[in-house]
Image 1 (cartoon, rainbow, N blue to C red):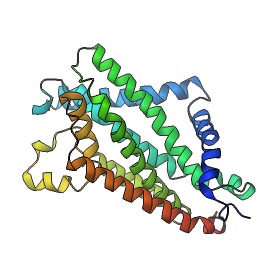
Image 2: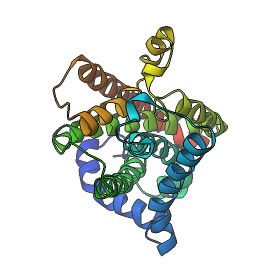
Image 3: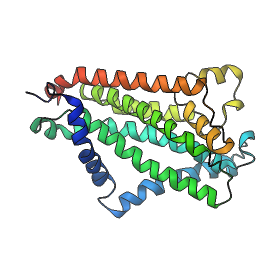
Image 4: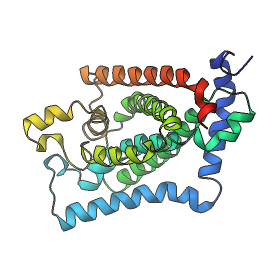
Length: 265
């Protein structure tokens, strides 16, 4: 019985821990610099944005006046990092493991799940470090926000995994997809309210930005940690439904295309 014919869920449960450890070990723990870079690079990016936008351009965000630009952006920035890096790691997950897929009978989606999960776990550790640093340097964070942050990050993980499954499957057949995704992510970063507030935009632009599924995450994390707003609302429900729909489509599409991978690898 082939890996596609055997029950997939038990295999995923059994193999997932091994492949997640393999992903983290190969990408980050192979050298001290690799692990350090996972934390230093995002912090360096945050410092660069603060320098350019605050000290060079003199940008001012009304909502950030009380907490400062670094805290305002930093709380939102890691949500984007989790998504973009998760998608980037998922994209080549099948192609990079061609020999493994050819030799071992396993559900191919485990490679995408491991790539996304390993990336999210490392960035989650980095996010915790940033929150500790912000609190230690005087930023008033609402501890009540910790109650709501877990479901928000779980929704983000589902959205990231669903997107990663779709793109990883398509990458097998469209080898130039990675370059297109890189450009889309670059535009997506500036079309998501990370370096600014949606309230700074004209009303029509605010409505258009509401169509971006990633808009929810920086705004919700800010409301949790900076305002202590843990009350659920319709925006939480929309985000949950969007994440579940993308994940469902991702799993369905990946399993439909997986039997044809070996013909194109």
